Length: 287
Image (cartoon, rainbow, N blue to C red; front, top):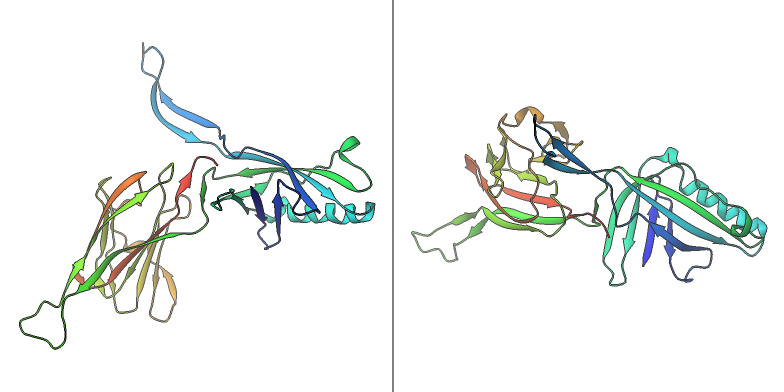
């Protein structure tokens, strides 16, 4: 098992549970699997108990116990200062990567819950110092470290040279079954690539759709992010210039997420042969 922490300014530390790195060794860790849950309930008059409405995961609390080693007291102090600088809570959200023995890596966004603590007594000597680091993950889900990219719609060519008329020029391949193997629904980033007019992508499994009232020319794009707290719709012209396009969204649209398991996605447009790309990361309750 291996941990890698990267703060918001790019400084990082790799920690092992084995003495592969003599300067910093991960002694223990907690909070990687368990996460608090709050039940959403309602109660009617004269009802025994309550009715369950839903479950919400609370922020995840993680803790690391790191042993710092040095050849003398000054070297221990220098490396202790490095830990203080790395886990500076004023820097905001950093990233914690967890790599299992099989090489699979999961990631989570965390912020230090205060500065690191350095206990005294047996936790300190001339050549070592124990550091206690507490972290909070505002979003408690672990995710894949890389995106899954799915081409939802493309034109499948049917013509061959030399042409024999009449010939079929191509067909629009506009449906996909997307499997979310995570533990919970996942937000998506949808990219419509022109030329096309008024594109729509529907998750037939949930009945939800996103429709855009927009004409995209060749080499123009429209990006839609359905992430909670950071929803956005961005128009990107052929030269890469961006502008807010939230006003182009059909008012009946929903910023849908992928369900756990199978999702039947369908793309349609009033006209045009543009393509649609879907990007997402699977989300996990714990590791």
